[in-house]
Length: 207
Length: 155
Image (tube, rainbow over the protein chains, first blue to last red):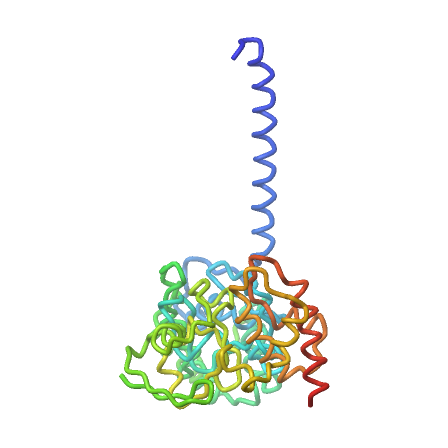
């Protein structure tokens, strides 16, 4: 290579680096745009109050991914829109030939990495939590018009006994073999917190 | 463990680990090679078949869930010598290129037509989300509409 060509080559190399940087920035921005914050961000510290412990679970991605505000479930640790155009359908179990149960069975499948639990489905649109604050989520949860007509006792039962809810602590592994993240409060602590919060009047704090 | 189920109209009993994917049983135990392995994580749809009439990704369907149920694979789609409308339409429109993924598409389409006799393009987009590396989507869309015509004319 002739020495006089070096400045020209250096110029094109610089241009190439700039183009690659811009492309990478664009991809990063696209990923960021497809990964929205689902609820009020949690701090690392969880308060000692039962309400705080309960909400640390209910605002976790393992719960909110299937409580979307639209007709598309979310999935994964980054809560991206569910792949393959998966949709809610009229019964919250998907559409005619793409049902939830086309892929999700009653238990996790550690071979394929597909999660599963009994009654795997989206929460009804009335129970959309995506984008709501902690207070708004609980207000919705206590509203019989949104919660399927449940009273407080039935809400506690759903929150502490339903297998699909408790799946959050046994979320299995993904297709790459990575364990899914569990809620930041243990199942036992969470169940205790829900019951304590309900027994003390199911008070919604002002925030 | 032993599991008994009906496949393409015939009762079968297999003695196998309960977590074995249905796809493994269909292909390697029952020697029905029409259903294909694609991704192994319920993403591509090449392994789609029917369980009790519903479209299912068989690579992610443990065999113990199939106990007592009716399974239909691409080999059981035709009624004897009478091809299913989906098969007829696929031939008319010369859909396949390499053909590997086509049984999955055809089974998903057959399941959809049972519930949506006249699918719109939006219905097709929402229901048939399998993956075809040959990109035969355009011909498949035509074939799905044609299959609906044939099925409706027959019924």
